[in-house]
Every structure is written in C-alpha cells, then in structure tokens.
Image 1 (spheres, rainbow, N blue to C red):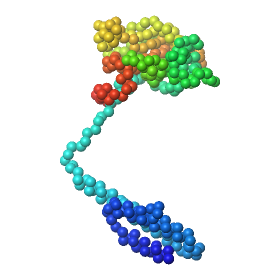
Image 2 (image 1 turned 90 degrees about the horizontal axis):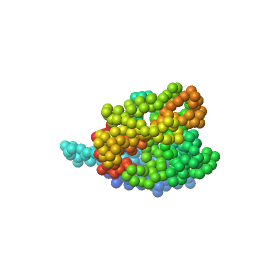
Image 3 (image 1 turned 60 degrees about the vertical axis):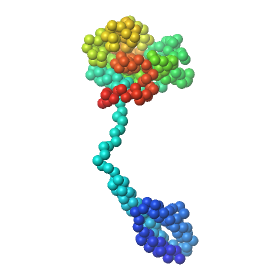
Image 4 (image 1 turned 120 degrees about the vertical axis):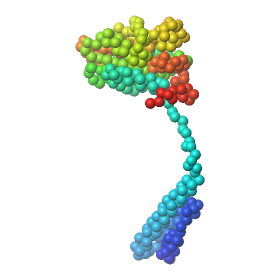
Length: 346
C-alpha cells in the first residue's frame, strides 16, 4: 500500500547522512528528481479512492517537505565542509595576487577638466540626443538650405524628409543649445559636452566621430568683451599662465560676429613645430555672439537679450595637453596607449 511505502521511505530519509557531494546528488536524484520516488508516489496518489486521499494527502505533503528539508540541510553542511577543506590547503603566508589597475581615458580626463574650469564661472552641464531632426541641428541655428553641411557627403543622414524633416546624427552639440533655449527663458549659462558625427575620411587628423564641448551664455547686456574674458580665463586655467591668446575673424551661421581663437603652441612654446605648422599658434575653438535670428527661432526676444557661444573639439585640446598626434588612438582601445594615463586616476 501507498501508506507503507511512505513509511519505509521516511525511515530511509531520516537515516540518511553524508558529507559527500556525490552521495548527496544521488539522494536528490533518487527522491527529488524528475523520475524520483516523490514523483512516483504522487502519481500513485492520483489513483487512490477519495476516502484515502483525505488521509494520505497531508502525509504525502509532509513526506515531500521532509525530503526537501533533508537535502537542503545536508547541502549546506557539504558546502561548508568543502570550503574548510579548500581553506586548509591554502598557504596563508603567500602574498596575494595583484590585479591590473585601470586608467581614465584621456578624453574623459580633458572633458572633466574643461567642465570643472567653467563650473567655477557658473556654467552647468546640459545634454541632448545624438540623433537629431533638421530643425534642431540646422534650421534653428540659421543654416541656409544650400549650406554644405546639409549635403550627404558631410552628414550621416538616417532618414530624408518626413514630418520633422531630415533625421541625422548630430554634427555638433549646438542642437542642445536650441533645445535649452526652447524650453525656457534666459539667463542661460551652460556647457554641452557630447559625441558628434561628421562624414569624413578617418586619418591621423580626422575621424567620423569625435567629441565636443560647446558653451552658451545668454542674458541681458552680454557683450563680446564678456566672451573674450571668459575664454581667456579658460585658457589660463587649462594651459597655464602666460599662454597667449588671439582672435581671428571667422564665419559661423549661428553667430555674428564670429571668431576663431588661437593659443600659443604649448608644445614648442611659440617657436614653431609640426603641431602648429611652424606658425607658433594653434586654433582650439570657434566662438561668437549668438545671431539674433537664432534667439528669435528659439522664442527669445533678441532686442532684450544677447549672448555668446563657443565650441571646441576635446580631441584637439587633448592633443595639445598630452602631445597625442594621431586621433585614431583615442578610439582604438589599445591598452598600451591607455596605460600611459594610469597616473591620472582619480
């Protein structure tokens, strides 16, 4: 009878004891496995009369719980015994195994240093999507329809046309400036760091993706003098006092007037080298006063507010700071290259 079988198996479970993992596994298979005794007993239970089910149901559940509890208890004991055996074989007088210490990526180091410098001037950090529509990437920034940046050979387009116009990988983080100005009212004082994409041939001096930090300051009575003093302070903090600065007139669709800023070459100290093409100067960023059309496109009164913007490539800044001559090194994850920056761990 089923009752007699359960009594017999219960006695067997109570009597079972082991510290062997193999014997315990055989116990599990015999009683708790998919083809084990408990499954067979439950299958037999289905065939008994309704009167017997009332009596045997509770007994059967207690039998199953006993087998599971026994296995769990012995499993813990066996694991503990195994650990003690392993520990007893260890020579605790031996030195521990060392492990490789990582390093921050040079671009991450430079990015953080730039942010920290501008934080001292009250600039916060703003971020936005890397996939942008035509309005935020081009039109709101005063790019004319025929501007070369809109061409297929300069931009990675994801989708042409549609309700929001062309969809593309952003070509600059200026799109974050547009989103910020659309979402609120001045004053704005923020940095926009992030990765951007240009359809360029990969070489030692160019890549199809790189990193930018752009800045925006919009308020009442902001002047070009404010822009120059802000960037002059930035250069002195980043490259050290005595670094010379000069501004050259330039053109950008979203700023007017616009300028490019050069610094005296930090490698040759202005004497002339391959990095500065023997001119003694290196261009590090573009800047200018925010074009009134851009402010109006973002719903800001250009007669009341003015502002300046600037943008720089983090790779260019890192080149000058660490004398890294090949841009491809930044994205190849060569451990030999990255190990050089272990001293810069923070």
